Every structure is written in structure tokens, then in C-alpha cells.
Length: 113
Image (cartoon, rainbow, N blue to C red; front, side, top):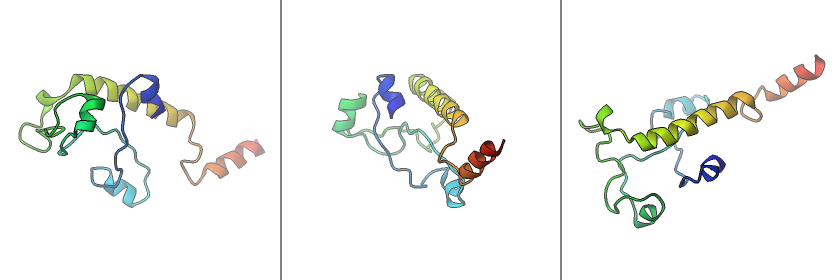
């Protein structure tokens, strides 16, 4: 959320409960993460105040429908979330601290070098 604050982008937490494509990965212990831009849920008046849009309307009316295709992309969301994903990958690339059980092994190995 620090990234979004720094970029002055609205953000809100969302459940990361395995209900999407990443579910099978976390079930077997493979770390996963993601960014959420909406799905079949309905936008609340509070979310309209934060993100804009229309209350009572699905975040994405085409989610998992026939119209869910490349012509239904929000280029604004793609730009913002693409940059956020790149930032996340760069952050993980530079520091894996606390993400893997082998972090202590790597630290011990560096200490021996």
C-alpha cells in the first residue's frame, strides 16, 4: 500500500483467500501475490467516493462473461497496476528477506564466504 500512497493512487485491502487462479499455488505452499482491480462484486457508495464510478454496478460487468476479452480492458488500470506489478517484482528481486524458509541458510552461507 506504500507504493500506491507514494503514487497518490486510491487503494483498499481485499481478501487473499485462494478464490482465484492463485489458489492452487498457495494450497501447496508456493508464495503468491496479486493486485485486484475488480470482479463480479458490486461497487459500494464508499468505493465510489474512493475510486469513482457508479454505486450498485458490478466492478466489471464482463467478468467471466462472453464480453470478457481484450476489448474490455481499462488501459488506465492496466497502466497503474502494471507499474505496481513491476515494482513488486523489483522489490522481491532485490530482497527476499522473510519470504522463504531458506532465508537463514542464505544468510549463513554469506557469513561463511
